Image 1 (cartoon, rainbow over the protein chains, first blue to last red):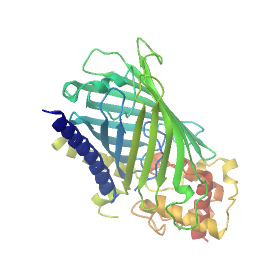
Image 2 (image 1 turned 60 degrees about the vertical axis):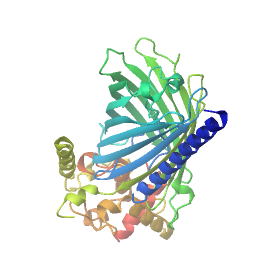
Image 3 (image 1 turned 90 degrees about the horizontal axis):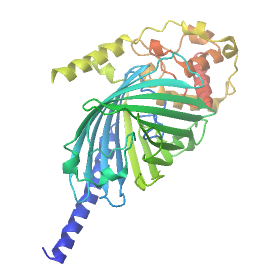
Image 4 (image 1 turned 30 degrees about the vertical axis):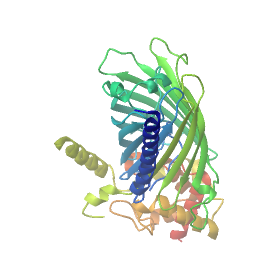
Length: 303
Length: 125
């Protein structure tokens, strides 16, 4: 193949990659155009908010990055969250990714449950989180960072990574509190691969956010301050059982913003910046969600 | 294929059972200091209008567009709400009755919860 045809081949691949990103974004908007939600701007950190009982939330979130020495990638995640009771929320995730000059792959699924053990609101509120994940190593969703996850994995071709499937259980202790309109949340993460004799891996996520206005407006408006929330997130790995700490781990931090519209859509955006050499330079995230209210009424006789 | 369907049925059953009828027992749990709290927006038409918007966005799916109640979820035009203090209602919105089907709304700023109380009070005058 001569230089010109190589160039045009690369250009056409680049075009189709950009086109697929655009298609995924449009699909996300389309899927969520029938959907509703009240969300914090966080992508990685969980607060003590649970889904309202009987509601089903559908969220599509997208992550894209162009790491140094690795191909750019785009990783969509679809999330279904159902409020079983006011103290129990269950969730399922489907994940995939497309890497430039490589391939697009389905990377796996996750099933998670969150439980609120205490009946009242305290200055700090615990939530227990249990998750089972069946995800291959090609996963680039960055839904959490644990152990010694570093950017070097992003340099390995999908064909090799997708062959390695990790089945793991993950627990999180979510601590969260609200004061003066500000939410503070912290998660401690512990994960163990159940396939292999690997050790427990740890991670963390911290976040804070606040609505831009604390009082509700007397008129119904979409772009008014009360509907926006702004905050910041910090997350990363904490090594494993044998080498606990920040050494050889990836760390990220960045601002986050969300818009909760009165018609039920929530849009979230966050650029997350790598804080050390083990992290990608920037992870760009965008999410759209909507709640289907009281889906269980569809199955009831008396509504 | 059967497993996910059974799981879905089990989830719906548990969630349906969890909706116990409102019995007003929560009123006994409100601390005295909370009971006597005054609503800073009491009777203000603008706060009532804002509370109505918040109600439609957050509460109407369970309690109905006009707070008339839905299924086992209570009608909010009631003697119990008429006699409850503003502080009682604010306490309920903040803490919920999570083991009785009512979620907490502590994620809403306190000002918005008071606006909701102003709206609920206007329904019961």
